[in-house]
Figure 1: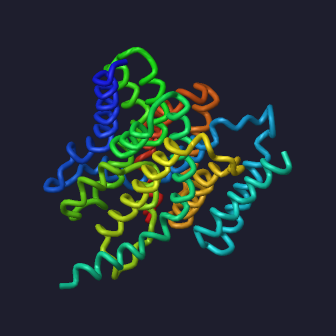
Figure 2: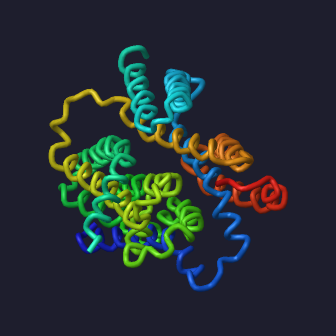
Length: 108
Length: 236
């Protein structure tokens, strides 16, 4: 690819990303009331999306090969336990990550 | 003139929320910069692409697009498919980004997974300006990413610390955000649907193409179950 072709390719990626981010705001203007159905989605979608993002993060974990997802499962359980106990975001995240790093570097 | 102290207060409230992202983006950005470096691109590329695209997974795909044959239409459609989840974020943020003035454009521009998740779930104290809080969450995340990508592009090949497993910081963060949302909501049906349908689609369609089917399945099921779910109660 030439430099111009590279720039066009990158601009296309920028355009595509921005379309997905801006489209809802163009479709539903702040002046007019947002349709009830869209408000309903706006309220209930996030819980489902956070679930989707967790699965997305774990998509390369194989239960049948390698470490069988044991480091991931153990670390996630620790994150949940720490969070229910202290409810301090940073402690839960740091605890789970350190646990995972120790497991994959030293144990497995 | 209260403006400077309002901004300062929002920055101080926003910063702690972005610390996990600092760790995660520093690492992922660095990985991305190293990958670009190893693929033969000078550090300008990861730096400018981090600045303008600011969508992590897409930037990794972009490396392959740049190495392949010139095909702008394919680049556009692939981007739309990979980033389609942002549509959901926008729908969820319609109300929250209202009345944020000029900052709204930047908030939407920088609405990556992490910025959306924090801005959606954070309990912003009443005395903190919400617009500026969300601005700083977005802006700091953006800085971390560009910073990591640039450093990776420059020094990537020299790094020797064992950072294996550090990328789990992102998984841990999404688990915490999911849990926070879980503790706030009365009905967990949408949370179950998100986990269950995504897992099902992952098993059926495989790692590279399960996002769009998952989104369609979630959207379809939420639409079909609208009446029972709305009766089930308020999430927040």
